[in-house]
Image 1: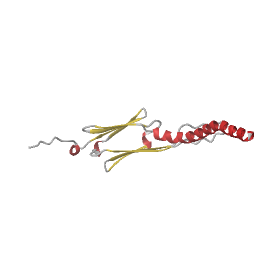
Image 2: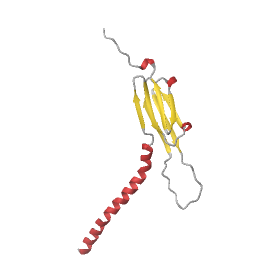
Image 3: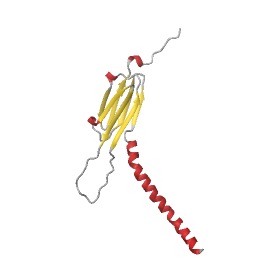
Image 4: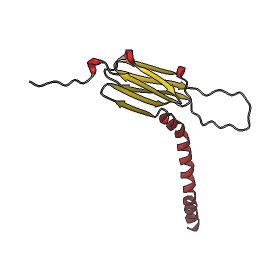
Length: 142
């Protein structure tokens, strides 16, 4: 009976270490996915006469960004690829993620001929004026 209790106690002594290893394995695998989700933090506003979008795009060049407007949906996308290094090193650590990003917004009534977009200091700013037909109009009741 003494051996059974010792084995039982040894098992419970190992449990915290098992949970710690499991937690590290789980979260280290998810960290790159969370990084992809967290990239592209955005502010979106609908005003009476326009839509405003400000999207963080750190390290992305303007020629890598695709903007499109179709069926009242603005879509912003880009891909980020890690530069391949052929150097042989004793140690490597890559924290910058690679992958693609896509974000879409409903911008009903946006005038596609008047959209403005600019990239400055890692922030993409897009102004989408609304067409005259889509602006709210006061209707008089008779």
